Image (cartoon, rainbow, N blue to C red; front, side, top):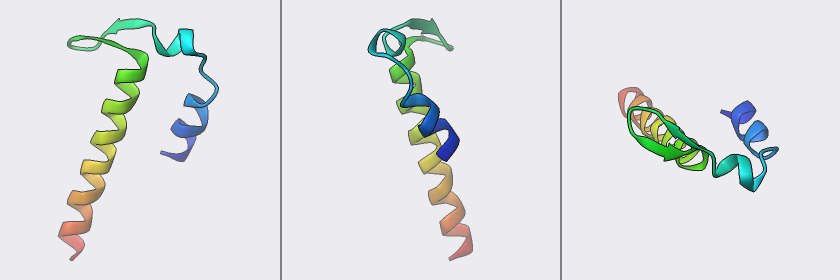
Length: 51
């Protein structure tokens, strides 16, 4: 996830506002937030299984 965060920092506001269709319409910024929440959710699940 570190690589992804570093790359996102290089995107301009205009690039973050680009609309795309990823199963539903959203901006690049919205997809980045969705991906981050998904990664955190998985990390929580892994932590629970390791107790």
